[in-house]
Length: 305
Image (cartoon, rainbow, N blue to C red; front, side, top):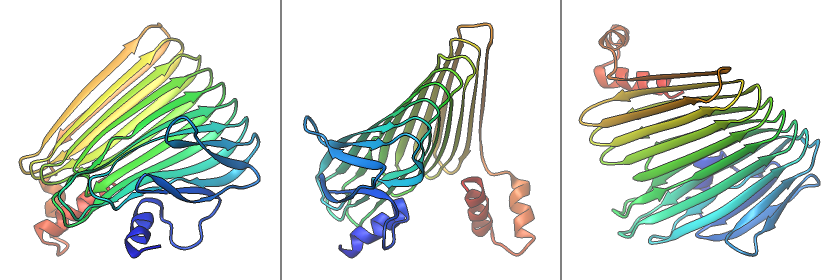
């Protein structure tokens, strides 16, 4: 494996040497390595690019890695991955895409992931996006995630995009049945003229279903970010959306909340805060010996931690 490949895998999946659990590595539109386990099977789709991942019921504390790396300029890679999680299984799934582009053509990856959780299943899903390279071709990522939760199942989703991605549109949809929980956390940082848009849509259809969506972002220079959330409560349920953004320089941040209650027992909350770094925070750190840039960096790192 080339050094660039190793670096990208380390950035997006913390892969450094032997991979724990089942995995499928995709490079430049093709699968290059795969491993299955007794409880987790990975099957190549026959009708379109992508894979089906099957986790047996009662599987406990196993890992699945499905990283994508792109080193070919001008490639537009689309992949469809479906996850079928058996009853009472409890697994960690680590995905993400890293793009290295040293040339003038754009490189793009659109990953469409669907999760089908059976009764009592639990998934922690981690997705990291990263871009690098000396070329002026753009690094573009447009992930789509759909989550379908059956009675008593839970999914925790953590997405991170901190460096090097020129343009992204992230679309996430959740459909929840009785006694389910969908927890979503996103962290984004944009620079230059980068753009980042996220759209979260969650339908709380089952009694005692709940969701919490937390977005933390930093927009610097002339970058633009847009956050949209659409939470619909159709029964006795709870939904909480929290959007916090730090804005610097000539950046622009847009927050568009939407909460719809179709039932008197629906309890829905939205909070949004956009602002610059507080002066008193800078002063406090500068009194400890940091200059202004160092103090800003510490505050931003803590905010996105």
